[in-house]
Image 1 (cartoon, rainbow, N blue to C red):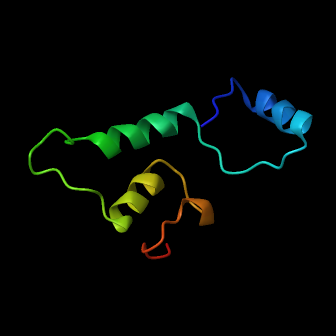
Image 2 (cartoon, rainbow, N blue to C red):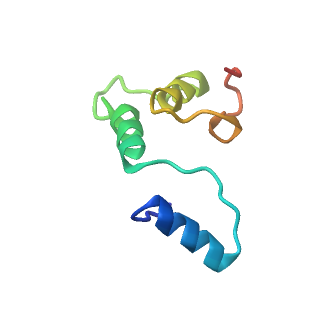
Length: 76
């Protein structure tokens, strides 16, 4: 993961390296995913998220599209 300070910084960083933009997320989206992903992880009955549940976590954070679609999860 690469954290950059602004959209403009991202554009300059990509141009300097002659790279195309890929999937990105804001820090707010990253926090929303982390909060949902690790909620309850210390409970004895915790279990891994299913692909459907993981997809719902991404979608709730506003992350949609082919990059965020997990194998085994139904297409939205």
